[in-house]
Length: 108
Image (spheres, rainbow, N blue to C red):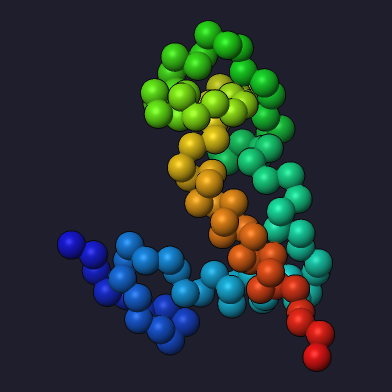
């Protein structure tokens, strides 16, 4: 059962999209120009190293649904963590697109 939370003065269910994402994108983009869609998913989440193409035999470690969807398999040369284009990447691509749009000031 989802919990109700209050963030940025708005109530939302914990399984809903965070209502603060647009606010955060604008706040972070104000002092510096951030391109939210520049080279996403190219660095390791653990140690920030640039990802490399993974050996084909590592594909067996990826969930079957994600393997069937295809896409590049990447590995961190530092920690060995695998990265693939699954549901999380699709959701984050949508979120990054919204952040980019909301961070860009509209001309009036």
